[in-house]
Length: 247
Image (cartoon, rainbow, N blue to C red; front, side):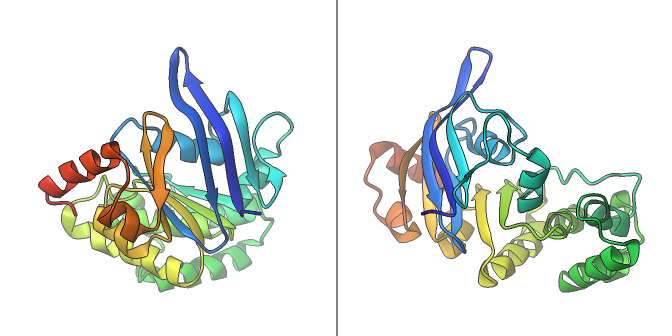
């Protein structure tokens, strides 16, 4: 049984069907990268897994338990599945330490002292303990994204979803964020990430899934998808990526 199972998932916004029967699985400790052109459904799929968007068909299971549809405990789901967005989404009126300790105190019931100790340990891991009392607007984009990752990790999720986490960053800041993802992968964190960083996907992914027109068009280990894809649409997409100098 896969750690995360996605079966025939459909998602519509009005008359627009964004996900048209997605099938995918993620095993524990795997890093699965979603690639594909803009608008293919990568971000929508992540939001459906986390319960931020309802699905209109199919089923999503985590460790064998259904986490989509009526009756799902969304608060429990979001304790187990962390998500990090491309636009950071830090609370601007809260300091770094307040952003990171909010969920552990409100959701997990940690005392303020416990939550602060854990938060400082996480911030130390990413070299930002000195910024604990700063507000987000005093941080660089790369620093804000690293804090956003730490905020998601603070509730000790079983699965991390990363949605184009480098797309809003200046090129020189991308590496500092990707280094954290490398570290998490090395520690065995189960991750599903949508990314345009093809070189990074080739390096860290256990499996790559190419989404096209709302379905998983092709999937496999990175050496197969990037080195010898089977389908013409996959080859055409990667050809454009190579021509743009991104692989």
